[in-house]
Image (cartoon, rainbow, N blue to C red):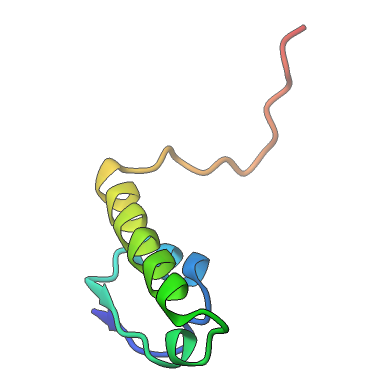
Length: 70
């Protein structure tokens, strides 16, 4: 699955990859950024980090809070 819309910032790209996307297409977020080269760099890092997080596997989500130990 390739995500092709709604990616406005690096955290969006990372989340898409963490959820298992195979890739992210982006244009507007980079083209319209104040500093496009910097945004492209941030997007690349986010995609790489999101993919690594997906491959590493997350811990199971908890539905109830866990008390802290004193």
